[in-house]
Length: 328
Length: 237
Image 1 (cartoon, rainbow over the protein chains, first blue to last red):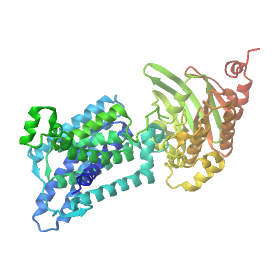
Image 2 (image 1 turned 90 degrees about the vertical axis):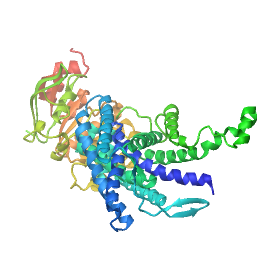
Image 3 (image 1 turned 60 degrees about the vertical axis):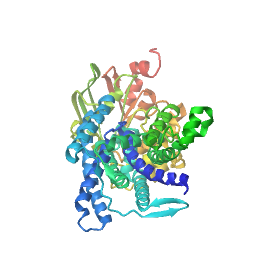
Image 4 (image 1 turned 180 degrees about the vertical axis):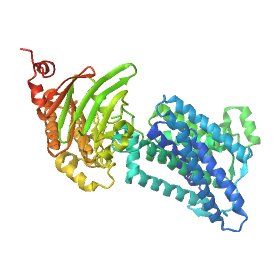
């Protein structure tokens, strides 16, 4: 089996989900320069709502695909409502406040949503019903499942749809104009409050679908799952250049691949038995057990943040980000 | 009167930038508001289109109290401003900028209007797919004016269209403003370049530290010794 290709496939699957979540961060940042830390929680709520709906319907004899679709169809409006409400109730009143105020509010909203979810869905790790039977296909020596194919395809379609919306429609042009100069956009007749609300709503809808995919892929859901996923997606957005929509897509995919390759190879690279000759103790230790791995694949989660730190040090504006100059 | 400003007062913190001014523009007029840097001209203009809240006084446009209308509704009613510093969208293409100008009039035939602007500004046509941030200062100003015209304004507010431009371009911009006025668009022009502004305007107001000190026919202002000394750079003798 081709380990490298296998990790790339796994990485692209996860990375496309990161990309979808990262879009929610980057669109909101682009338009109001707010890092919406509560976005990860929106994804979590999407997963949780889908979990409930799918669990209820699972035994009902409906085709599994239909059940998952109904689950998604319920998760999206709930997340849209959550996304709209947080903008309307928490962020809009702070539109003119110093930037630290909405940022701290975002952390507060995140904590509130997380604990509301805990009250509704308990603190336990929930087993996401695996009703779609996994089928494994072979692809050039690596394995790819039907779930992975579906996740990749859905993510690509959503990214394409979003790109069309942002770059080809009136609303999209208004969004980009508002991001660049809200005051002048207002003078042109754009109701910027509606455009900003639309940005939150679109991001939340994407996040809902991402939540369902993460739940289905990992087979588990928990009220805390949004934090780590959110932070990774945020890292992906920073990697691509925060505020930049193609950047979030590229950053997400890249981060997924880096993470998968890192997790796949870190064990090999930190196997001390490869340098067994340096000390007698090590030689003995390796004679008994041919592997002495310092960092295993459980260090997977570290890579996203190593990438985040490297980007912030080496190229703070991100891969596709431009240096943000004075507003015109 | 298309635009009627009465007792308008604008404050920033404790500073009175505009100290209760009266001003009026009738349909079809080209009126200029001249004055030195910091006299309160831009503040006045921004208050007229609701960007700065008026502390006191009223702004009535076409019989409508501007304070009671959200900013984004004003272009739908024909009140359009070209802001100071042009305010183009730098990462949108020239054509997208123009399309944004027509955002308020959804019923308009946008492609045809864009072609009309290209007729007036051939340079913009050459650069239609370029992002606006790559244009030169003069081209950006033309784009800002063309974009405003896309909204089919009844009253066009121009804030320092000559700012930062080479003399040759300044003359060209003023020529364009004159043409727009000749096509029947009412214009309120704010300018530091008093001579050129008064030459194309019918009437003018002179503003000084937040108050209007003179208001007359443009020709009379051009001949006024005080104006000549203070704004046209001529000695009293």
